[in-house]
Image (cartoon, rainbow, N blue to C red):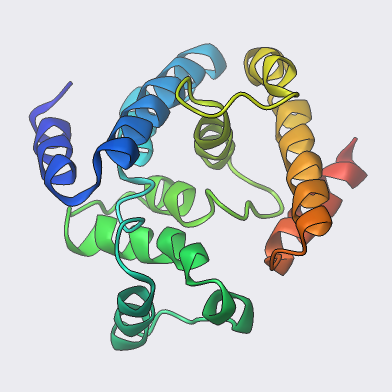
Length: 190
């Protein structure tokens, strides 16, 4: 791993709680394996995986304050569930605090919770890695997801989106419209 990634890793260890830090390492390594499998840039995958949750442990009211301060738009859904802001805010912090200027990395961080139509390969890798890294709770679909991640990345992405929407609808949790839009986009592609 290069010096820049080692520096970021050391900084994150100070900022994240232990469970989030271990999850972050799991995403970073899973993303690197997926990048090697699918011919994506390894450094981009390692960097985006490492920084994807860099804003996750910031308290909810602080996330909202920081977004307002830095003119990051906050939707009504995000006001109701500020945890969703960690992706947008994370992309901002990756650039401003950690000096990441690569738009591929920044977008992968920005869209790792909601997805988006026409996701880039790196967007897909970080979204999927976040869902299935080895430390994640074993869900009924996890074996299928992990198989698909290395054999049919679009089918894997759709499976996660579809299952996530079903789960959110069944619990009544707030749903970011971008997730539904992304799921519909990939359903139409099938």
